[in-house]
Length: 632
Ligand code: ADP
Image: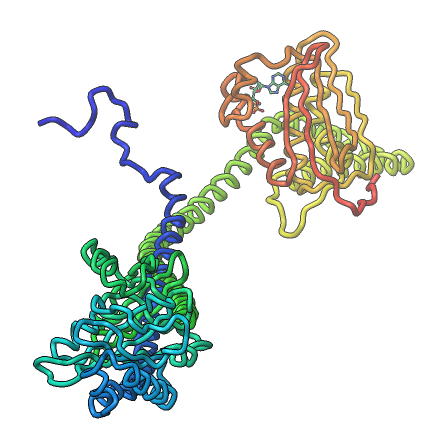
C-alpha cells in the first residue's frame, strides 16, 4: 500500500490548499457586488411595477378622454349629415339638374346653395351633374369658384354615383383647403341625376384640442393625419404608405399632391391590455399612444399622452424598493452576524464547560494523587522524626563517648596530677605531726596552708573533669571564649607539661559565643590535644591560639608547627573513626564531634596547612550580644 507521503518528502506538496489572501480579500467585494445587484434588481422591479401600474391608470384616463373626444367628433360630423340629402328635396336643384344650361336655374341654385352654406355653417355646398361637372356652388361669386370644374375623379363623387353616402377627407384642388366632404346622390339611388356635396372645415374641432397636455391626432382610412393638436403633424402618415396608395393619391388628388411624410413615431412596447402602446417621437421621451375608431367612419383617433409623471412615480418607487431591499438585506446580514456570534458564544461556552469539567476531573485526579503523596510524605516525616530522634540519641551517645575518650586520654595525666599532691600531702602531713609534737606551731601552720593549697588544686582538677563530662543543660547556651580556652588548657595541663611547647594564647577576654561552655571546652580540648599530639617529640614545638572578631562572629585559630595534614587526612578529616594514631590512643571521633557541635550552634570548623608548616584549625561561632563578665 502506498502511503500518503510524497516520496520527495516535500511537506509543501501535502499542505491543504489554503484560501489565498486575494480570495479572502475578494469576499467583501463579492458581498457588496451581490448587494448592489439585488438592490438594483429590486429597484428595477419596483420601477417596472410602478411604471406599469401608473401607465395602466393613465391608460384608463386616456380611454375616457379618447371616448369623449370621439363622441364630440362624431356628433360634430353627424351634424352635417343631413345637408347633402336636403338638396334632393329642393325644387331649384331638381330644375338645375333637368336644365343644366339654363342660366336662370343656375343662378337660382347658386343663390340657394349660398344661403344654405351660410345657414349650415359649412365651407362650401355644391352640386355635380352625373358626369361630375359642378353645376352650381355656394361660392359661385368667388373668382376661384368650382363652377364648371370636373370633379369626377373625386372618390366622394364616385361613391355617391354608386348610390352611397360619400365621406371623404381631402385637400381642395382649387384653393388647397383641406376639409371633410360629404356627398349624397341626387334623384334615384340606382341611377342618380347628380351628386350633392358639402365641404366642412374641421379646424374648430382642432382648436378645441390645442392647449391640452396630451396630443390628439385624427387619421383617415389611409392613415393620413387629417386633424392634429400640433398643426405641423397634419398631412403626415401614421404608417408607411404603399406605392399603390401613393399612385392612387396622385390620381385622385385626395391630398392635392401633399408630400405625406411619415410621422417619426417608433414603437417601444405594447402594454398589457394589448391595444395601448408606448411610442417615442424621434428620440423624445416615451408617450402613451391610445387609439379609438371613430364610429361611422374608417377613421381613427389617436391620443398621445405624456408619461413623465408615471416615470417620476416609477423612479420614486424604484428608489423606495432599492432602499427597502438594502434595508432588508442589511437587516438579514445583521441577523446573520448576530446568529453567528450567538453560535460562536454557545460553542465557546460549551468548549469552556468541557474544559472546565476536564479541569475539574484533572484537579480531582491531582488532588487524589496529592493526598496520597501527602500521606506518604507524612509517613516519611514521621519516620524521619523517629530516625532523627534515634540519631540524636546516637549523637549524644557519641559525644559522651568522645568525652569519655578524652577523659581516658587525660586519665594518666590526671592520675599524675593527683598523685603528686597526694604524695606531698602524705609527706607534709607526716612532717606536720612531728612539728606539732615539737611545738613548732609556725611550721605546722605553714604546712597546713600548703595542705589546703594542695587540696584546692586537687578539687579544681576533679571539678574540671566533672564539668567536662557533664551533659549540657537546657536553655539558650552561651560561653565566654577566653574562659573556655583557659579551662581546656587547664584540663590539658599534664600533657602540655609533657610536650613543653611554646604556647601562645591571644584570646581577648569578654567574647560571648553561642555555645554550651562544656561543649566548647570539649572542642578546644580536641583541637589543642591534636596539636599537642602533632608537635610531641618535635624540635621547638609550638602551639598557638589566636582569636579575632569579624562579621559578628568569633574566629579562633589553633595552629601548631607539626607535620601538617596529609592529602588522605584532608579528604577524610571529618569522617568518624578516621585516625592515624595507634590503637588505644585515637578513636577518630574528635574532629567529627567538634564539627557537629559547632554546626549545631550556627558555627563551623575548617582545616588548612599553614604556609610555614603545621596544621591550622579555625573555629567560628556567632557572637552573643550580652557580654559575660570575665571570671579572672
Ligand atoms: P584522633 O585524635 O582520635 O585520631 P581526631 O578526629 O581528633 O581523632 O583526629 C583525626 C586525625 O586527624 C588524627 O588521627 C590525625 O591524623 C589528624 N590530625 C588531627 N589534628 C592534627 C594536627 N594538628 N596535625 C596533624 N594531624 C592532625
